Length: 404
Image (tube, rainbow, N blue to C red; front, top):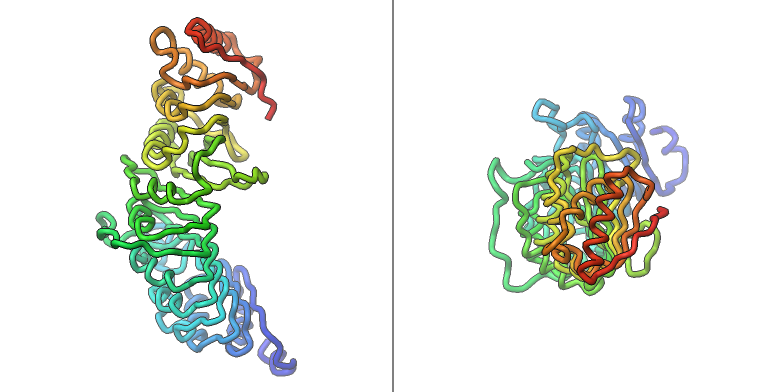
């Protein structure tokens, strides 16, 4: 590669590599030495030793660089016994990236990142994923270094584990400033981490044009997110939704609101919890919805289903009241769609709503749409009891088949 670059004219250089061999790493180092010609770099699944070599050669400014992606090796920093990932030094790229438009770092600790971001005036897309413990950036420091990026449209900020915080204790929390920092161009924001961190972050920012928000929390005992609730309430596109989905996965649960344009596969807002235990999924979901999404009280169409390619492994000892706690949030729901995976569980929970409790949950429900209506006799009996009780109370509902 070194000889080839000397023969060819001084054309712009684009560098991509995945799982570099020794020979590949040598070629990439040779190309990176032409720092005045490199315009794009994407190096994925790079080991610590390879990253050290790359960082060592990228100490000078890269004046033409517009896209930079670095991903650490998947085996680095997976556990306490894993090798410590190489740290990108403060002097990386001379601490300056004036033409950088897209930056993607994954499994890369980079203590000098705030300094680099302060110079990246053209940055549009910022993706920081699988942030290791050693790559922690405080919420106030993050806001400070992003506040000058007036072109920023898309931000992903995802920690690798719940321990990605300063020290073994809780997140260092400071009172929010009297005025919030506005991000006038930001349209997409994705976060994964602990709720305390996000609370500190969203208390400091305003995003008036945001139209896609995705949040995943690591599981915890208590979700208390008043700042997140206020943050969502300041975004016009997230107000008064009429449709919501609750989706259960093998190791997570999420509630999502679709885009007002109803584009397929496009959720405007998604809140999720990373958790495998079924009872924790339900209790955490109820907590998070009540704490963060009071707007769910306006939802008229509710869908409950499984997600992914494999069905979630549900425990059989889930109490009916846990389902009712979740359904209680949706006080304006008129149409409830339930997939076959969850039909038995929800049917027996609804069967509890008899007598004086008939309108305690889902008081405005008019229609039940059930997948696999030809279910077992006990399930159909439970649905029948619920429908009969609603009819006697003067709140009749219809039951139909849901063809997904």
